[in-house]
Image 1 (cartoon, helix red, strand yellow):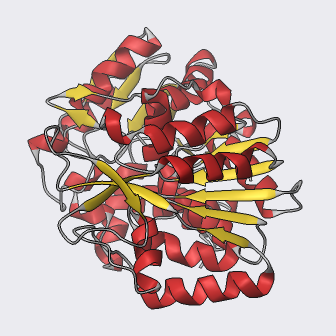
Image 2: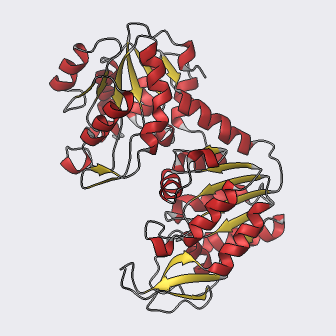
Image 3: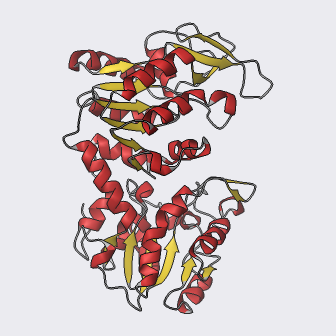
Length: 401
């Protein structure tokens, strides 16, 4: 896979696909970690005399313009961080984008409006995809993908454009690939995996792979409710995602392989997330019908920490609770502290997890690697071929099938 060090960029327009899908509340970016992660690639391209055209998605606007998902705040933040001229195009490939890009000079940056405002980005229609890919490619002389958080998506800006332009990986994609390849090869043991957060349906398949490789798998967050339900325990008002039957199968498989699959012993529950709702600690197998799980309990946090402090390799994806609410952040803080104190190789995987640890005061430097891609990192460890990486590895004019 070529990187930007192998790409001729001087006085050329470079289309750079970034993952700028950052959390925004009331027009304010609450965590700019993904933007900062893209800076090394952007600075290098600008220093080498490139004119940079940035494209990204934000949220799920369903193929049409939606002011709630505009990239305007992101462009403004890039302007602040780069300290150079950043121009915003109010469309993706239309007249505004073409005018802005045409006026772009070496050392300048243009940010296109949200890719997903155009239905072609996620279309399954080959003709529609080809039209959009051709329009994007026409804006530049070469293409760089530094959006690791999107490489598991077979979207036009991730997959199709690479076949139309000289292409290379940015530094972030290179670093992510190296860190996750290390986890997918021979790891130093004990190897511990911590899985939490929501979207259990997306995370359950990776458990099937990890029970064959990891020594310990610690399950917290909303995902734990799926495993508790699989064992026939009540989960109260908690949402059970994914297939409990599959979770039960993985529990059995873990027993066969010897992987220690640990579930919460106790949890913190409340009737709602409301700040005034009374919270209490209960046994994980006795969640009241009128309560929901909002964090792992103190005994579980201690047990998880004890498993992590002796691990030589750790992969963590998903908070242990609703960590954006301080009183439900204890479990996430305990896991983060254990990894920060570890002498082993630690990987924090996923935008939500990374944002959570930063909000709790842990800088990225506290860990071996902080990934920007939750779904991408999970699919990588599951052993799937990621379309974006396959496209970068393919010769010009031919994208891997």
